[in-house]
Length: 252
Image (tube, rainbow, N blue to C red):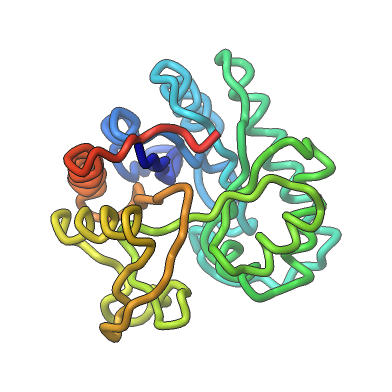
């Protein structure tokens, strides 16, 4: 039976500001990319989120990003590689400590937002993130975009790489994500998104924003927790995958 992991960005509330419905999403996903306090998430929120993930046997991933609360980690920062390595080690360690306090642990690392997009093509920052993961725990898998500098350099450094597809994001003809600043970058129709993901798993392709067909091979599908209708999208994706007899389970 074909299988796929479904992940979601969670733990992104901050203080009295609430974002998404983490508890509802955790009932539908198999892996949770939990913020580490740099782009989102305060300590109480993160502790609560890792505990909820442990209770549901959902894998915990450290979603590391630029130190950019005001921009939600979606602004590129031209940070020195050594400083980026230190920032990523700090974030993994912080979330891992919270997870261990609730009986879990960080099981993988996924960059967030602008950092995720930058290391698709930015070799110095890609190397910096790889160095951080290797320094903290070289057995941690890393998630990234297929064909990215990050996954290539991570694999060369001996890390386990996990290629990721995006359920609710549009693709360019080159297989990159359409920038959020452009029209049509974020998809919203649960039925359309679910059908796209079944096709991606079964055929290894998605339709790009210009109508062309793009090859996408992935071990995990991301649904963004901050997207409007995230719960409905995740539910539709899980239902469609089940209907196609695709087994949904953590990638490890």
